[in-house]
Image 1 (cartoon, rainbow, N blue to C red):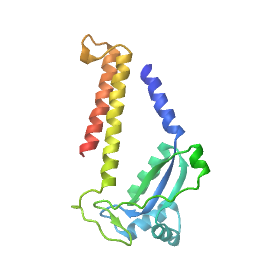
Image 2: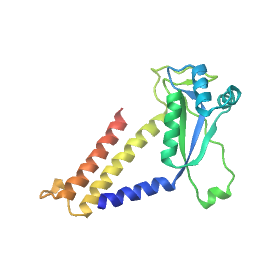
Image 3: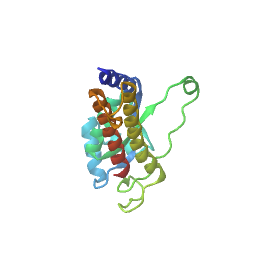
Length: 189
């Protein structure tokens, strides 16, 4: 019952947030530009001129104000087509709504990824600082979620680590350890 409530709160939190799917002319390693353009033309049911415009612009928002699940669906479809896109959370508060929107920062080249109209990045090049932050940030978030779940278990009666465990203790500690393990895996891969 308590896990169900936590799940509903997390799901509600993610569905309240809005995201943009942004494309910056980057294609996945191993794909050819012409093939990716054909795939995108098929995916978007657009003519080749429109697709060429996507690759010429520095950054294009392909989908605005969608929930997390829909943004992930778009990102997955674009990855299958050979295009690399970013899912950016829209942060809304009074100060940002009043201020004029600022242009997004340029896309950092990634190892194994080819920039259209730019240099080809080799697979043996080290990750940039931005990539390292993104990679470690996602794993750290999972670790924090695991620690929070173990903490919730403490609030509801204890922990398997303290002895004399109950059903909820196994549940919250097991789920917490799973998220911590997932976070560590994401940090080292």
